[in-house]
Image (cartoon, rainbow, N blue to C red):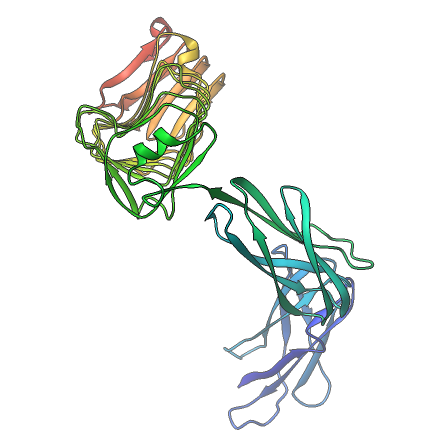
Length: 452
């Protein structure tokens, strides 16, 4: 026996419209038969489940009505019957009467100055009604540059639009915006945006080396580095953005001189993104020097350095989505404050992560659990009270806190297995902290703890 011809009376419905669900039950020879307990399991867009019974009309023909179409989205239906192993699956959608959406946008992330940029977008009609005279705007940095009109777009169909733009130097936000049609009430999906960087300095096109590009750049410029391996030490002494064209897997900067950092930053407001930085074990892959602030280091991979990424007396910087592997230290913050770390991955280093300072401000960092050491999250808590560190911790830092318990953990390969800085009335119990530079480091916290 099997369930066949499962369908709804329409594929799309309006809000609170009744849906008729139908099927036919047949035996192995294709003859319609009657069965008991034919039901439809309906999963709504929010994941909740409702059941309805399908009633027999003609022999083997079953129908049921579903009325709770109170949510927009896709409803998944599974029909089953007593003593029939197989089920039938189908779906239907509940749509707005009028809903135009920008469903995709294609534009380069980088381009050369004064080049012609082509921006393509897909405009979809995901409402119940056909629409006409749809205006689509092309917007750069909040200013409309041009528009086009789609004469007609049928329900549940799409079309493509294209714009051209001559790009000035700088970082720009481009937006495709489909103006709402008559009676359209949901407009959050009427636009898509993307940032694009237009650079007038390209390595090796404009200058053969990254350092030559830096030397000839003006503060505020963007330098794009094409794919390849560059053997040099780069001193960034002015506020610049340096990006690889296609990411760290394609663009490698390796130290020419083992006595110098691969990238040494001595200016504020420097952005470095998308490089593999390889040292020779003596210096840092990316080094932010004393009193350097407000830099952004993202999407880099540091290998074979003494420090993968090293901040020394450097504050208010952001480190995002970097990987440090096979260094002596992965990421190390020394006498620095108010730095934000998210989605950084450290593994295979002698010491994956560490924070060192001589004052409370040196330990004031914003580090969430998206940062990991050997696949385990970093727990770096500031101003917390009456809590227990979770059991999956890979590194524990507790700053200016009270009554924190760290127990039953194995913490290895970090600058500190457990760091307590300016923390009182807290406990460390049954913690194994081997193969760290400091197993347990108590900074102005030592007399407050019971360590077992």
